[in-house]
Structure formats: C-alpha cells, structure tokens
Length: 201
Image (tube, rainbow, N blue to C red; front, side, top):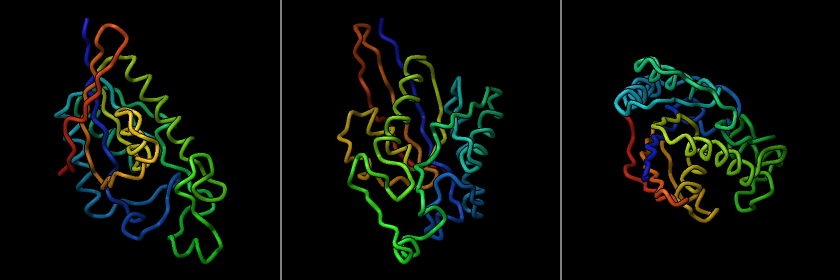
C-alpha cells in the first residue's frame, strides 16, 4: 500500500534581530512591521494547506504564527523544543562584528565543533531536526511546521538526502515556505520530493 505524507515547513516572520544582523537563537525578539504582516500570511498558508497537526518551536516568533494558523483550522498547536533555532552560545545577541571584537570565533565548517563558543554544532541541530521529522513521517499525516532558518535548512538536508555541507547552501528568507511530499512505497522505501518553495504573503 502506498501512503503519502504532505509536509509544509515555514520559517518565522521577520524580526528586529533579522534586520539588525543579530545572532539570536534561543532568545525572543520582536516582529518588525513587515513581520507582523507575515504572521498573518503564514497563518493563511497553514489554513490553506489544512494540516492535521501544526508544530512549532516554543519561541514567540514561531509560536505566534503557528498558533494563529492552527486556530483558523481548529486543530491543535504542538510545541517541540527540538524545533528551536541553533544555539549561538557566546555570540547570542551580538552582530558578527561585535562578536569578533570580543574574540568570539565562528566555525561554520566543522560538523562537531560549536558554531560559536558555548553554542551548538551542526551535528546537534541536524540530529534533533531529523528526530522530529522521522516521528512526523512515521505518523503519515498532513503536517505543518513553523520553525527557524537553521532547522529549516537541516530539514531540507535530511528529507532530501543531501550532503551535510548543504545545510549552508540554502538562503531561507523570513516567511519562506517549502511544501514537500514523502511517499511510502509499501516496501520500506520512501520517495521524497520538494514540490514548491516560496515566500508567504
């Protein structure tokens, strides 16, 4: 029996940290005026997609549009800590230049070293993202996820079977939307397809 999962992944709306070039992983940051409009745009995308489940990280910038979209449909909104952004450690809340002035180095090439001191590695964010997605795939439902740029990139790498280095190959804009289909062929195999990539609004 062939079954199919439809998955919508959205990156959160624009925030002040995005416009100021701040490394904000685990902290909250207010929406910009454009971001506020994108909250509604993402919620409408979720409503049109009509998922059975809506998941997000606990952070406000993903939780608000996810809750709104789930509310339009009357389905549950689920929070999963594993969908949180990459932890930037000592660089949290700083610009790239501010971090360099403080002697904080970045490592975007290593799989196992933290991106910045005290933060998280690529392997860690890839592993937790993959764990959430594998649970979703096992459910074989129609699911929407509102998350962050790092998790979005990790999801594409995992779902499409791309090399780990491809995590930095994608430019994921605020309010970006990806729709994917995953078909189970009934013999233990899965076909995965990125069907559409766009920006909400």
